[in-house]
Amino acid sequence: MIQPLRAVHRGAVVALALLVPAILFAGLAARSARNRSRLATNGNAVSFLASSPGVWKSRAMLSNIDRKTQPPTIILLPTKGLNGPDLLLYWVSNTPTGSNLPADAHLLGQFVPGRPIPFPPEVNSQRGYLVLYSLAHSAITDTAPLEAMP
Image (tube, rainbow, N blue to C red; front, side):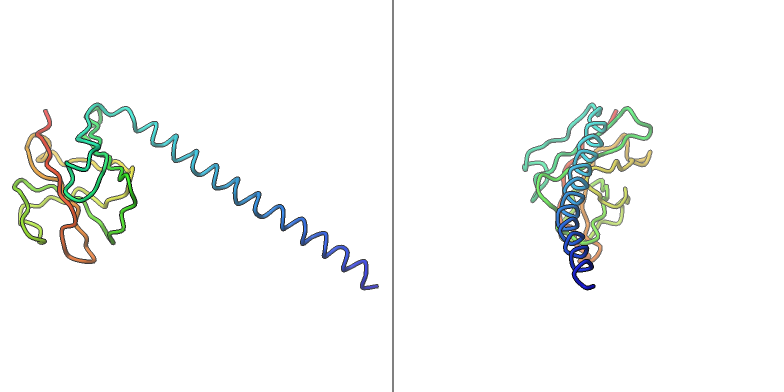
């Protein structure tokens, strides 16, 4: 009486042992393919700030400005993972000093790699600096100069 149940159970465990990892790998492959296609659609931007570590003070990050959209947007893609908690992107008109934000800082949005962040109209025609600010640490984590947009 127990033998047929054990045989069914053994078959179910073997099937799940093969099926669960296959589903997991298929989901990971589909996810990375979707991310690659999403980044490819964002590739229509016309201006790059830089992809070298010299523009951002402490991080190598690809900064892509899309001037075709209204308002213009910026897409930031770090070359390595960013481990800062609660990162926000600000624009300031003067060089930031210290770890505190200047009074004229304009919040552009929450930093999410690959997500377009729009520039407010008052920022579009001015030179300034992009600032990554950690809300959790209440400190500036990185800055990059930004040329005026036509």
